[in-house]
Length: 209
Ligand SMILES: C[S@@+](CC[C@H](N)C(=O)[O-])C[C@H]1O[C@@H](n2cnc3c(N)ncnc32)[C@H](O)[C@@H]1O
Image (cartoon, rainbow, N blue to C red; front, side, top):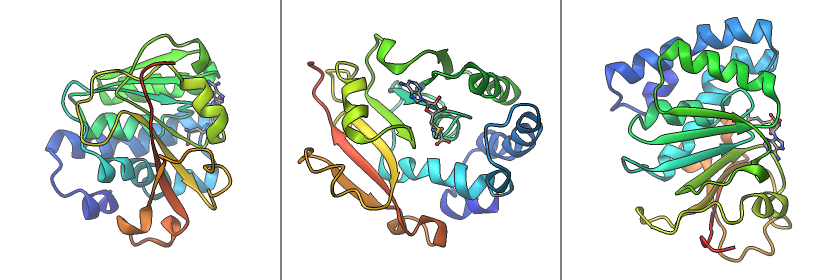
């Protein structure tokens, strides 16, 4: 938890309480349904919470923003972002029901009222969002194909509506067809070694298909 406060020192007491509660909830639910690896659960705040919150270093979502987390798995990056932005709506989608069971339990345990979960493939979602966030789900060409037509027309932020993707490693080849993609290094935000190769890709997307 100190790790979160090191980088986010303006949290409300309610946010601190929710971030604190996360660990016990995940430890408990992860024993029943394994969504986070053993090593990762021991480093939940570094590898999952702080990593997810890198998006909050890139952008401050405005109140009323609608965000979808595609392939949320155990709830990353969606859950930490929902705690960080209580006045935004988060739609967490995954094609595997048991993962969402954990997410639903965590959402209930925290009393998070701004999260909706849907068990579906993202291709079947017919709503629009200011931003679509994700981590470790598919290569960019596949991902872009999946989320086409799901971006809202109205711009509320300086950062253009579109995809915000947490990625690692060399992205040159994967992004060669996306000239408007911009890469942000997480080492600009965090000093821990874990973030050395980690990046955020922002890809603006038009609302039209
Ligand atoms: C490697 S896990 C990543 C989970 C989470 N985002 C994280 O970083 O911890 C990939 C997740 O994407 C989900 N997924 C893969 N293809 C999907 C699709 N087309 N629609 C929705 N979810 C999908 C899988 O079920 C799985 O839970």
